[in-house]
Image 1 (cartoon, rainbow, N blue to C red):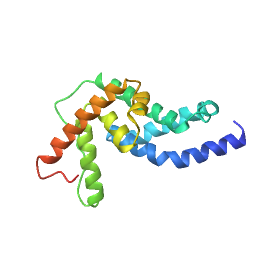
Image 2 (cartoon, rainbow, N blue to C red; image 1 turned 45 degrees about the vertical axis):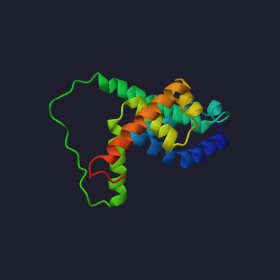
Image 3 (cartoon, helix red, strand yellow; image 1 turned 135 degrees about the horizontal axis):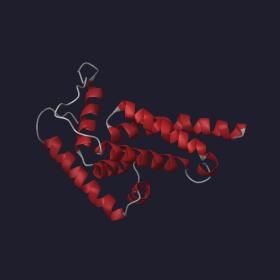
Length: 166
């Protein structure tokens, strides 16, 4: 890759990485998995930078990120479940902002995969229904119905119980 293209890609990474990382975290619910997804996405964009930079490199990177998340989800479904849950360290004391974010991520993780992807793409990344459908490779109607079901589930979870902060 030529020097100018490398500098252009480095600028692209600086601008897009934070947004991709947050998107990956909201999709996966795990900060370590999110970092891996973003790293792999950017590596794949770099490999095809000459072609990606001509069209819409942000959309290209986002599509790769969602596809990698879907692939990871499919592989995980094949794993054997156990009766014991892994321990998680979600101790309070990191501030209300982190608690709010963790509540939102927990609620998103309770959604089925397609609904979670649609809600994140539509309402966090602010994509249109058409752009979300193109990113996920589904019809616009699927995005509409999945988003509607996901938002209804989130609303129900937010209105019941006192523990939710979101």
